[in-house]
Length: 294
Ligand code: AMP
Image 1: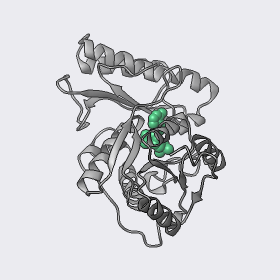
Image 2: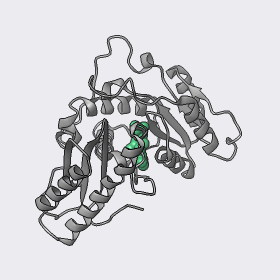
Image 3: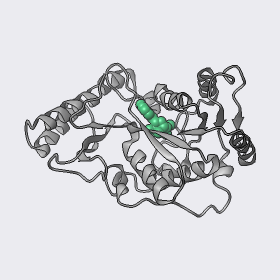
């Protein structure tokens, strides 16, 4: 909905009552609504999701909320970049319709005690490495989808496991929203854009481009049947260690739908990695057999 709105001041709402009123007004005017949930520090990956909503003729609602329940105590909640003024300026320039930046107490009132847990999909990949992460994600996304009640919600394949978890919960809980997955946006050297890339030193940023390269080469070799998947994954792990990554939480090829690790390519599969470079934990994934590097 860029046309009549691009010159207007982009509203930033912090109270659910204000949000409800705005959404109700759009609904009664017959507008369709697209939601893009984010934790802010917006980059071109996020903006691509917003453009998808605008291109579909939807009112583009962007939520900005650094969700404490998806961070473990040992993780980077307090360090996570917060740049609201810059984010709002970027969204205003794009023609987004609304920023939903709830206060903490709006999302987690005193004695908050109800959580959403998605089984199976969270047994793999990041699940075991970040024990309460997906429960935090599923809970906050369920709340955002209830608050905004969009027709569609847009999520990046960058966080592919999250995309699958959200798709499953929207179906299982009859949330009546279409979840749209959007391909990963990358820098010219292939590194997936991420708010956490801001943590990388100049030298680490140089080396980080090796991660998607190893992923793409391993995916191509797997698709070509150059060696067994365990052999290829061992070689990939060694290449990353050699380049200074570590610890490597996982590098695995999994079924693209169930996320169960596979030893042979019989159904659509993806390669997934989570590895630390210095203090920064980087994750990435891509389809096996169809490299999505630039
Ligand atoms: P975050 O702010 O990290 O929670 O991300 C908000 C949304 O943007 C999630 O759906 C992410 O998957 C998506 N996203 C983050 N980075 C990228 C990227 N490089 N390309 C596409 N989508 C992304």
